[in-house]
Image (tube, rainbow over all chains, first blue to last red; front, side, top):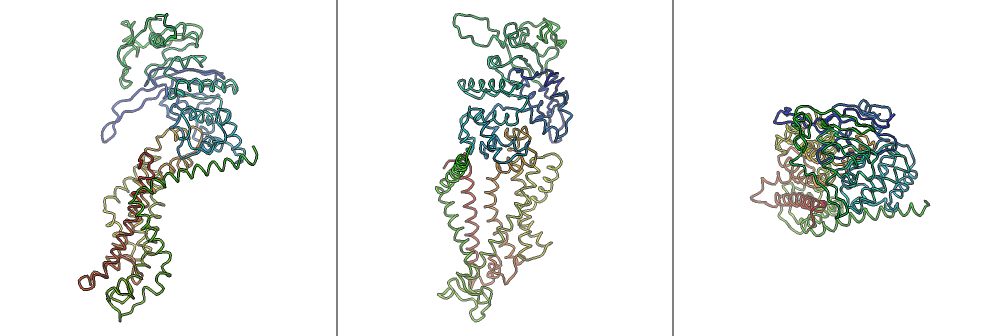
Length: 319
Length: 296
């Protein structure tokens, strides 16, 4: 059985207007997302800004309360757990945030930040906490002597290392990585990615790796899910997706990755227009407004999520 | 890890705390107005503490033979209608006004800060309830509210403190709630929830420390207001009762003699003015010094 199983997850944000806050509609940030994650596996989730990938990550941990759906982690449906049970289970399901600096309390020392999960969940002595923090800091490439310093005294890459140390503090089974490197310099990105890969190997961790950049995801993922307007439009193994993309949206995304060889010319698929408003998603296939291969049926019927074999699934009428 | 590393950690920590304090102190020191306010406040505090040394006699003992004397060598600020030294009464009055300032702000902080934290953090119905009560209290001008409360509770030092304190509670509630509303959306609060910190821990360890700066500033400004309000109540005769030397009451009883003996009302008025000024200047200076975006 999969470590994490997400079934038909939905999150609608109500849009309220006026003095009486009457509901005038809803933003369908996540609109029926399903996937599973095996032990030790990395699932990459990619998509444009606003496609709902961050909301998916938050909903899995119930940092945002989902509207409906199921999140089964280690055999238990997280959406049915009460406050205290949820609190305890979060010890094994952690998150790393996109903006590493703002995820660190500016009034706490780095030692206090990393110690927080340990103090919350384990009843251990001060010396043990300090030893554990020192070990974690060393593990993520920080100097334990710096545990008395404040976050603003560190660099961007170090902030993310602090965030990783905090997430690792309780030996989690899975970590949701919400664009962990998109705020970092390219040279630092590689270091942090390598650190994440090393730790995964060492602790047999599962990652849900959210990113807007396919090339970043390629580096670390076993399987990739492509999201568009709150839905998954294609999932496949890493290899399969990059070599044989099926959905027109995936093809367009992949064609935008630069190839480091000036001799190779590639047909770039330039998508026209913007992502439609999730307040009023298009009828039928939500991608039809921008799809270069649009047919009559696409504007009317929503495509099913078809299995093309080998776990490669796509939501498109034409495949 | 041995003893030395532990000691090292400790050293690093204290050093860092020091440097932050020093930076803020440096900013405060460059602000002339705040320094002046601080100096005034220091004089005020020293006066209050050393009152029996500065004025050995009993400030409340009448001496009708010396009634309404003008300033002289014996009585530098003159005497009041009962022949008591005005300087002595001002010196002892500083104790009373300081007591009121600290008492009032304590009431405001102890009641207002927790309510503001809860209101801002939990939102919803709790917030709605607390905010409507706050609205009602804020609909009255602060002094009028204090006056109305005194009318209910009665006169005297304790009731003065309670009345003015309660009239300040809504200010703290609003201030703290507003700050909490912005801080609770911070990613580090979400991160704390993700690592399993319970609500009380989030409120005390993450939110409260990050809203301390405006609270500190408001506390300093609030002490000034408290002294002014207490003086106002004393002036009207419903505050601290005679013979306790209280600046507002001194001002009130002196106003009868304003034409022939202006010193009786003037000097307590100056004392009120300077003490309020000291708190306000210091409060403004603190606001600027503690705001990391504001570089002097």
